[in-house]
Image 1: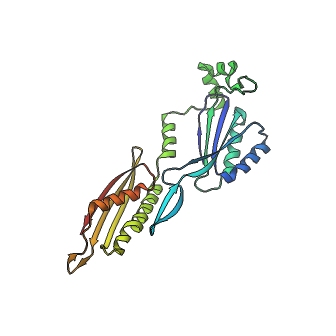
Image 2: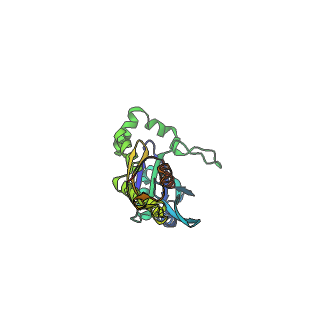
Image 3: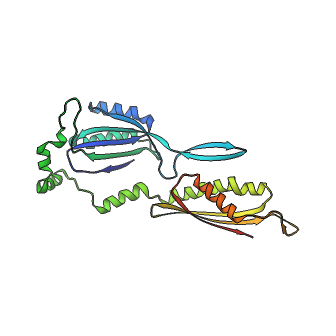
Length: 261
């Protein structure tokens, strides 16, 4: 579970994105802790890079595997400074399964909050708090509370941890791409007696916010008495390869090299 915390006031908005089946347990744990204020709960959908639920579809004798967004539950509520650490720990421990995809927790400082029925600002915007958070007094308060504001390195690390894939994820993408191309293209070419054999090498890189699929394809055409039985259209092979990779739904670039031996 990843935690992103921005500090700047004594009242916070907590957004917890977690597995739907853990929602009731988290609410029960918060209630037991003593939290009795409102909690906003909503269903959200999304995916992290290539990871998602896989749905298999068959069309005209061909099988297609599609990634669809995962459904999560988002909980939103307001807490005070003295509750922050306990609340986060409760959510982390209750929502944790130990598997990938447990969710994320975001904590934001609240400048003000006005209930419609009362028309009054919450204590997050009172003048005393604003005064404490100005100038030197604000710095002294942060120091007293042991809070260090995030610097550029901290923000960059959070971005890399959240968005930049690691080597294991890239290898998994290479494996998935190889399996899809083999099953939905090259194995079919062999069955159609167009090629005798093939060699496929897929490498996935991540650069400047985009994935790069580098595919090296070597095709050995089917021959009869040394003569190629059916001509292979390299442009069609390259286009079909790109279409199959596009079906993953990833922001990607492609470097596809096809050679015939």
